[in-house]
Length: 397
Image (cartoon, rainbow, N blue to C red; front, side, top):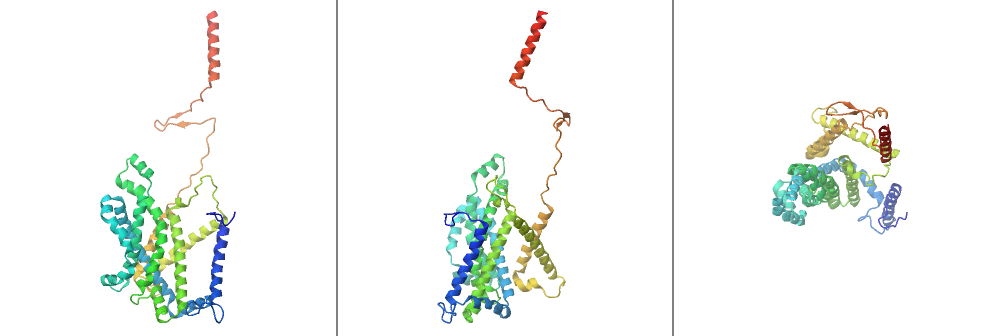
């Protein structure tokens, strides 16, 4: 298969090889434009890969890299949780009920054009300079894009599903619960995964206000005040790595909650269960349980000094630690529920003998033998002819 076929498929080996090759190619270009004593790009505006790599150690020792990274992750997750909790009910109201659609859809579509960077002062005036203001700022930045998407996904629900439940006599609530919510949420998960990047876009603006820490505040401090471009590149690389990990986590959760989206379209195609995929799934499951166990231990240590008086979760995530509690226990509850509600495999029962098949009538609980197979037309004609011959013989006698 040619690699230049329009929309041609790629095998897993080809995709992995091309991804590694593309990354090494960009790294080589970066190295070439920054190498030598008189490089094409000066070190003050475009540092070399080696200087950026060395900046990670400086950030760890001088700028509390791990703590600031966790603060930004907690702020990001808090903004996302708030945006989703607001967008889902409001989006369903506007998308399902004509009254709310007519009254508010135009306003929801128009508010997307408001530049959030221009209303930062209003958020400070309304919510102050604390963590709450930053969470609300990120939540609004996600909400204005998420609301129209929810309304659009509601409009995209296929009529065949709606006609089916109406034929079965479903009420409005049953239609929402059995058709709209599963269809919209399963497709909305992909939109939420894509919109994750928006919160990281606004996080530098949010964290640059005040001095509570975070990657955004660190970029502002080392970039604008210290002129350390190498540290800025290192922090941007950390944001990219976090974004890639978040994307993988979203894909994992999407497969957990909506496995039907990943079933093969061709029902006659054989499912390829390689040894590597089985080992990977097992390792992922073990890793999730280990992380949940560590989370429970750290959560208990917040109230009972199990590992000492130091509270790691509060130290790392600050005021957003309650959101970490909420997400952690939500995942733990789901995994426990799934563990105790595994689908039971049907036990294979011995097939009855063909000679002594017994049919049980459910109403009378009486055992009756099955009916004989219907006779063929030729057999019936032969029996009828034999019966007529016997009648003739008896008449002659």
